[in-house]
Image (cartoon, rainbow, N blue to C red; front, side):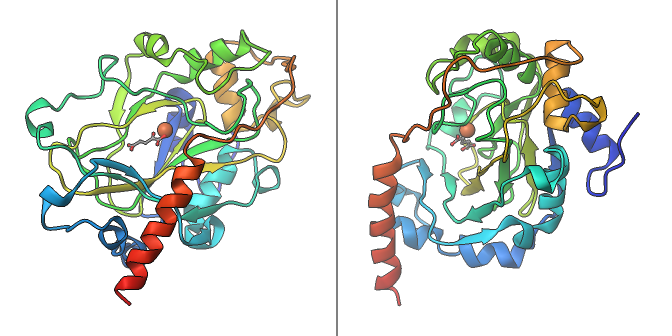
Length: 297
Ligand SMILES: O=C(O)CCC(=O)C(=O)O
Ligand SMILES: [Fe+2]
């Protein structure tokens, strides 16, 4: 029996189950986005019109401001909750203006590679916890587009058939896996369904937390802004619910990937939070950006 959803269309549900992601288009307004994105170059201390000042080609900015997703982008929030089994299973979540900026390098125009197992950088997100098959720390990966993103323009690359690969690995490792312990370079060799996460300002990609993805070259050097906030679950995923109708879509995607109807998964080691290496650097960047914003007041 197919459950009825208020926010997700049957096509979005089908795509999530088979390819591990779906897209909510136009989830927030371009003018609202501009309030945050207009500040990017001031914060970076680069001249937007002069690429020779773009010291780094890819920057993970810190957040200065936050907004509850449920208020900022209610259609995206509704779809997110439906994927995770209903709002009562989901931790309240915020989005911030800590953009991941892809400015590209001069040589990207001549060397741009389409998404494939041959490009580097494939990974699963979650540098802040020890990973188990049922980990609650990340219920979804969200890719929020804050600029228009076209093909060859620095779009995140996504491997639509990576969920089963990661699911099998995590099922085989009930003791958990550290963020660096996956061997993503081997995993991506098993994948063949590659996509570029293109779209317009306000489009939101909702991806299974296991999805392998990678940053890309930006051949156009049109500044690309995304954020990739995780959203957490209140409880670990449960692959052994009494009533199969109660499995969330993220749980169903894992069960399909493993080719089983249910699974009694039990972690054999404690869950563990990890402080990412990037934490101190983000604090430093935050201070520098605040000073640049203050200087133009
Ligand atoms: O910049 C991108 O397109 C992807 C970034 C990403 O995957 C990450 O920071 O974890
Ligand atoms: Fe990522």
